[in-house]
Image 1 (cartoon, helix red, strand yellow):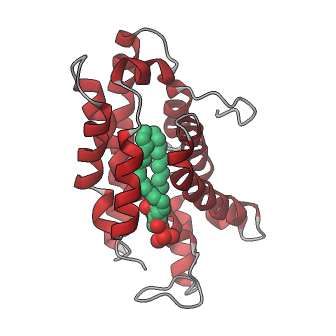
Image 2 (cartoon, rainbow, N blue to C red):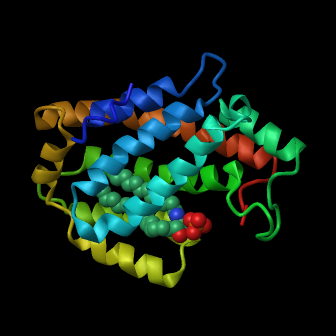
Image 3 (cartoon, rainbow, N blue to C red):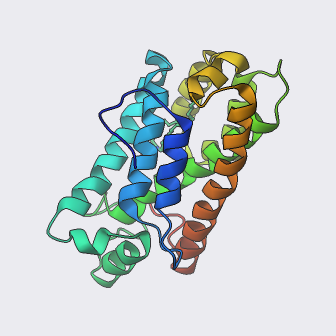
Length: 215
Ligand code: 1PZ
């Protein structure tokens, strides 16, 4: 389980959180999903102030979900599946345009879900990269293939500037905090398929309920 007291990023910890978020019936526990993102925020925070605006948004999205979990409706927010059912049944989602529920659980989780695709693409590039490949290029390519399509120009520009400041590959591997470079590649090899599974389950659920374009 993620230890929120420990501020140092550890890739294994993030992997463990995303692992715990899958129930035997392949439901996704929101609490562990949030722990996974909070672990990733630690990495963002160690990368310097240019990443501050990204970290702020990720923290705010995880906080919205945590607040739902702690609210009187908390039990309905135990899993992504139960959240979708609860919010749709009770008409708590702005479906076409922003209205009275600009911060529904469904639209908030959708933002993290889209970011999960970026993460998956980025980590797979990192895993298969050569010693001298640039992390900034891997990050940018993964971003352009995924999240960028959902972001306006100003955010794309700011993200692009931040990417340039990413540490070089060997330094980035150190930040992962799971041992030798071989061990990093090994953990990445376990992390990517897991993130992929969590992503696919959510994608299918959102597609089924027509939620992939929530404003
Ligand atoms: C290792 C390098 C990290 C690079 C992170 C790459 C992702 C770039 C994301 C740029 C997000 C910019 C800030 C806020 C954007 C929001 O407008 C959007 C849409 O939300 P809305 O405005 O509709 O409420 N938010 C998002 O797309 C969610 C972004 C979450 C990013 C989490 C990144 C975690 C990184 C983990 C590091 C390994």
